[in-house]
Length: 449
Ligand code: ACO
Image (cartoon, rainbow, N blue to C red):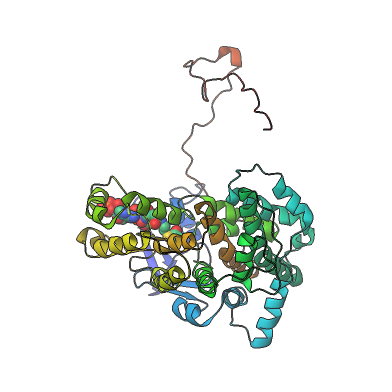
């Protein structure tokens, strides 16, 4: 018997099966041979939320949650944040290796020269209500890109794939900034090719009447590092959405729009916003012990703490901390920093949190930095989507090359009725309950609505 195998005995039949183990996993399809009757479908694995299922093979990002390690293509996140730029990391994620100087020049040139969006896309944004959520606008904008670049449907063409990668990374910041300007009722600001990636984004967000908006270096450096920290995080909810939707061979813009939609959800991209709300409610460091008691009573959640994968200090949270001082020196001091620091210290000294392996995650400090930059909370998730676009593209590209690529199509355990006889409507009986909320008289449309 092979040692790299799993022996399963089906106690229903007494039959024994040998299933190969490779990379610490068994193939779910190898379970299919396990059946009681020959004409049965065969055994499946049940794993709602994929908590213990590897959905692909990937060489983009490595995480060791117990040790608090994050690496992209083998390079530690600490080294990348210290020595690289976001665009270099985006190249690394997508093409698998750090670029040489000429490769990086070309990559930066291509990204810089694709930051403009078609004027019709601007008109699309103008059609949104004044208070439309910027993430909803970004979602629509990224989806709409597919209509401007129909050739991207040729996903087997490496040139088209490259152009889609460039356009997505170049244009998502422009769409993100347009969504902010629309919200604020300000004119949209066009990209400035003389600025770097982070500077250009801040210029499109904040430029007023000045000829050129050059943000403070402390802010652009911190933002570039935040972009690196959020660039990829292996098979998270939004990446899984991109791969799932992309597996139908749809164009990459539509697949990435699915990623934006997944990130929009409060359980994924919205936690740093919740951290700010929590810190504001705590109000002052004296109130922390009482707040932590409420957390222990389960009346509150300590937002920005805990992670599905990291059961140690999130390495990204450690890196962010180095940028808090420089950002606040360049902006205005926020008392929320003291509350956050004291809250972290007390939680890390408390057995309740250490026993449960609850440590600060990337979101604990990122919102404080965004707020210091003058970015409103509604925009936090939009800013998360900018760097994550590089990760989504890298994972989408990798999937195209995967010899095992197939349309994603999970199975289910059916729990409903079977083989019922159709009942004509006049013979149907049952409770008088009407599905849906009570019918209301239609409201008179508001003026201008
Ligand atoms: N505050 C208080 N208690 C917590 C917290 C928290 N933030 N997170 C987990 N716990 C407790 C749970 O109540 C549970 O306690 P118990 O064993 O006594 O019942 C224990 O710790 C284990 O928690 P799980 O819920 O099993 O952990 P899971 O891996 O499912 O959840 C999650 C991870 C969702 C991130 C959770 O820690 C959480 O809600 N944190 C706050 C939200 C947050 O910061 N999200 C950002 C994540 S980073 C990102 O997405 C970019």
